[in-house]
Image (cartoon, rainbow, N blue to C red; front, side, top):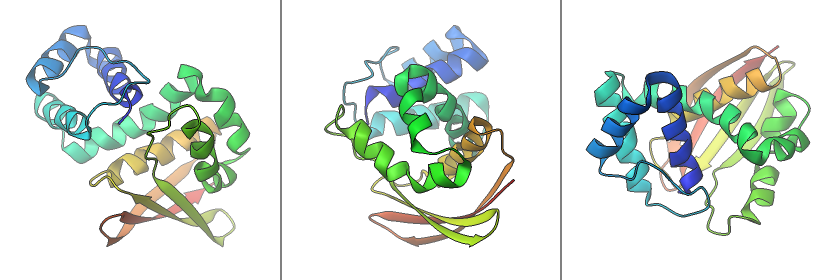
Length: 180
């Protein structure tokens, strides 16, 4: 993963629990205390951070990922990706439907990026099914947080439920999303 992800984890912990907590987590995870956004880091380093955060904060890993997913939307908007995010859609549904296009634009600057893929199927007005595919295992809870963050981005109430895991490699997760 690019350092941007780990930098966001650092900022999330520092903002909510303090610098000392972050230093302790980074040490226990055996990782650097600071990250370069455009540099590649092993995925295992990020997973180790989640594991240690879970232990230190006494939160289930799924809760850590979901909370971080919500934070990620705001963080990336503030880290220079806000203009790209604004071009991705004017509402929750359009934004989600255009995530693959957004990731394609970002990949121009991050050639080693391995983004997930998102597909939207409209169910009825105000409801959709979201298909998430990724080569990375275990991130389904993060998507729930991302959906909440996208709702905040558009001042829209979003209710999301993970309803199914369809396959492995790539992981295919299915969510039912209500938005109003």
